Length: 212
Image 1: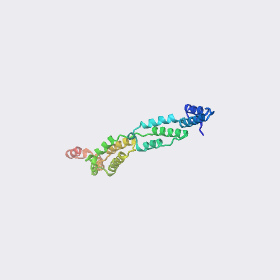
Image 2: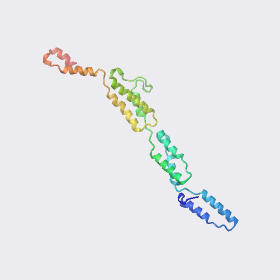
Image 3: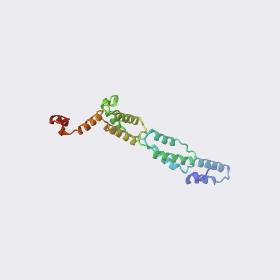
Image 4: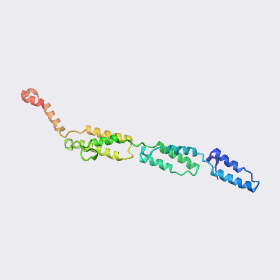
């Protein structure tokens, strides 16, 4: 029931040598039987060396260096059966692919620092440094949503490096984009002032306007 192509040349030769041993006496028959049995037990799958190399490569990886999801794919591959050469080849492929697909776990220290910096009580995170009443509702919501999203990314063990980088940057960009609540009224006042002509007014009153 064995197929030569499934095994290494060396281990197959041991079996074929055992099969041609003489059977002239009962003692030789017993010896031949033992030789065949041992040769079958010692057969090495053709793909075994590649599987061994893949397993060694996988064992060289450190779980905490990678995201849980990608690590699970690797451990699942390592647990696959390998009772036939076809299964050995399939397992080798699965392990190799899983290693290639491992996703590095992101360093979130900069993200955590960025989040904590937006709170007056740091890591406790209950009170913002900035006051919501100082800014327009829409820009404040965008800013606080960015912080909330960053906290989600921070807690996500499967967050990628790019997701962490983007979340950190978004806090900064939305903070920069905050608009003071009084900005619209100020712009309107500036526009009204721009419509005035200096020659129409007293020097003293005009100076008050320009000083403003």
